[in-house]
Length: 364
Ligand code: KG4
Ligand code: ZN
Image 1 (cartoon, rainbow, N blue to C red):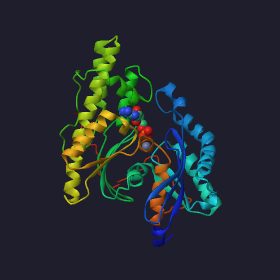
Image 2: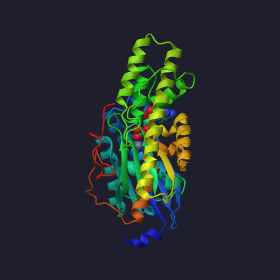
Image 3: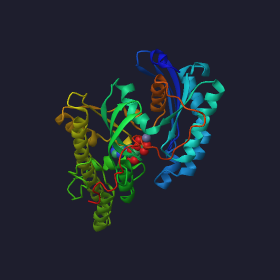
Image 4: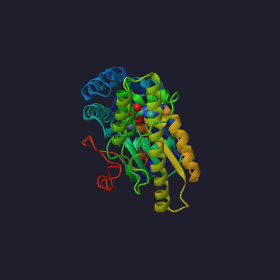
């Protein structure tokens, strides 16, 4: 695959099985670079895991085995394409739960081998990072705030495969913090939407800590907030419905303050790194991007810095295979394909050069 691929229309089948969504999608990248979603299938396993208040890896892996073939067949059907029209097969090869990754990657490799087309191992985080190019035609560079159940990162996206991590979480991911807050307040899973709904009828009057606020490096720490929430909940037990709403509202406001402060710091750093002439766009991705209160706050932060806020539609912010197919198409256009021996990686940082966050001034 030479440089000529840059000027060719490319159709890629994408597969996502890194967590609890079994997803397949077909995306076309036109010669000019514009992307088009030909099909997107997402089979959520939510009902299988909700009783446990979180994703159970073994159950997820088995469900991927059972659901993936049909999801791929459905995606190809919706795209109205024969497999012969597929230029490459891409799968999320990490980071994530190893059992699920094995299912998706092995299936993708088998299809690629059968078709005699390239296989592309996509970093799941790169899928999230590049989505705004598909949905909004956004060029590089931009600042990405990735906030999901498993990840909380601030990254400069300079191009395909070119990421600079500015900040990460030292303990819990943001979505995980919402899920744990919901669990300890007796709300359902996933917790984010439940906490947001309860918060809407609560008063954010309960004092909770805002760890890491004002620190020079835009890292996050959320475990202390969760502990403080538990303490406040215990102090009020038994909780009335109004207590639950007030605790949710107070928790959400603490999160909003933390994310606003850390993102503002990252916007300053983005400028310092790239110069004030660089494109000013802030992209938010990951399931937590669905939170309306957080989105409004980020709109304000971005506006103050003269940045445009770009939030892909919710179904492309949470886990999906469109982002894997699109990242695959971009990689293919750069001639970046993988061998069938490409490994699966439970851990796979987007910026391997980033210094470890631990020691960056932790424990607020
Ligand atoms: O990206 P995602 O769908 O899956 C991964 O974790 O990769 O994100 C799911 C996370 C869950 O932790 C969920 O509680 C959180 O996103 N979430 C929200 C909201 N909707 C989903 N968190 C806060 N507010 C929401 N409205
Ligand atoms: Zn994700």
